[in-house]
Length: 305
Image (cartoon, rainbow, N blue to C red; front, side):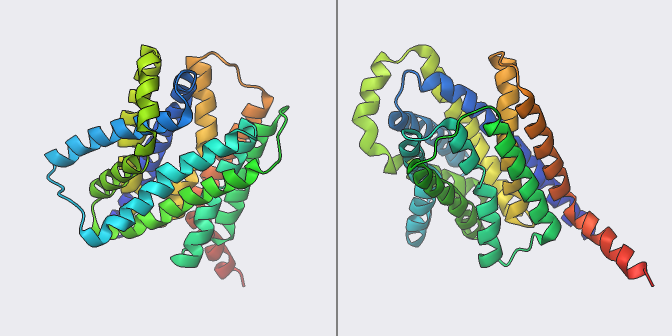
């Protein structure tokens, strides 16, 4: 029984890491697409293409339709995890720098852990919170090293975006109690696409003039970071012992994005990236081994006279 629980926990960590890797590639391809497609049409194209892929998969798996009483739940998930998150993110990015946005986005695991402790009574323990602080410190080093950080009202909008995604992670836990991860992901992303349909006319106009490279970048983001990524993420959330075990991997996103920029674009990381990346990895290692460390500490103290 204990072995099965350990295997499930490892599977959740693997799924989370695979998701974060896919999401990290999304940052690189977004840089390609956003040059020719404005943010809101980009969101509709991305999640619209993801919806098509997921609907095909869902039809093949015969997932059926959600119950009428649960439609508001999936509209809420679609809004928090995708539509509203992107709207607030875009508003924030008109007034703050990317460095500032990265720091604020990195609060999602902290916010999720905080709300999970209140709602689900999940305990991270002292070691868990120390690890979160170390990881967040690494994010700050990674994004602020020799960079100017703009502070203003955009921080408020970015913080609301972070709260939206943290809330999505928490509410998704309720959805997967009644639906499979595949069902929950399909219904949520399709709902987000419906909510972004007001941008349809603008999207059609921009598609006609957008180059093939940008359109291919959007399709990639719709298939891999969005459709496949959120399938893996929802599955990880549904089987994880605690939500924090999964969301903690979001701290690795800036590090992976930087490495991908080095590989795909050729940007060489500065000392801040190196120091911040090592700090993040140390924090992740501490977080994922917090239970073993706590047990060893307990055994050590209990053996003392």
